[in-house]
Image 1 (tube, helix red, strand yellow):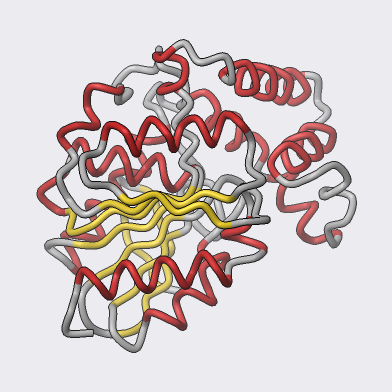
Image 2 (tube, helix red, strand yellow):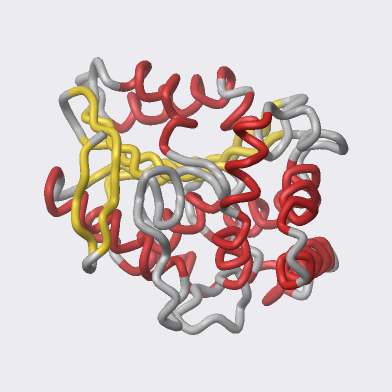
Length: 275
């Protein structure tokens, strides 16, 4: 693991390979380790960077200073791009996908291509008035409530089972359960930053400005709300590709990465023909 100072916070990241730079952004309650198989696939042809976002893995906690997570985590990407870039390909899953979208809108000058795997940009379905936003409101408010009641383990169980399947949390090993429980406060910060009322949030009208090659990936068994978000992205980002992988749920990029990684590698190779 390497380390970099980002706005006074210590951020750890994995770096491997040589060639065009790819930055991999993990999902909530995860860390850079989720990308280990993809790092190995890409590193023969790319410089692959995978940070632990604030409050995850080995990185310092997310500062609670009134700024949403996406401003803090976005700074990690811009710092890494300044160090290794200046332009980078970005791949983001779930939470990481929202940060990737923010980079595409706010810092397009550093972006070569964009790959998002079911980004939880719930503000888009809120803005569009789509009924599946009820899923987001129910799960986020319940997780918040359980955390406030001091029931972090119950909140962790609900969060994991929502995105995976009923019983998924109880099927995890004790170390993974403890990590999810330990990071559930940061998950609450993630939920808070998904609202369309969050200052600095992106909206549907911002998406048309994304001109870089874009790939959107989802599983056929994902949540309706996640599916609706990908539909908005595909409609609004001109020229974007949309791939649906059969039998996969929201967490497949972390726990069943094989088919997803194949799509990512093919897309990135197409952006750098010399590979």
